[in-house]
Length: 99
Image (cartoon, rainbow, N blue to C red; front, side, top):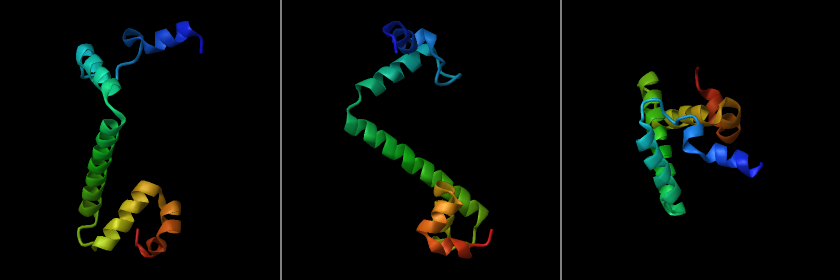
């Protein structure tokens, strides 16, 4: 990519905002913080976000299947995360789940 194009892409003013409800000053500070983070800090952040997403997904599965066993909840979460085909290859018990 030519250097002038990279500068334009990297420029805060020329790119699309990450969120429509966040001011450009706050977004710029957030981007600076992400750039300044060490790899372990970034890994902890992403790990925490993944755990939060898993917790929310599991809560949704529990809501849809309130009488499901822990094993069934685990398998249904696997279907959500991996897709039915891959989850079934990894966890053959999925084929026994009623839809």
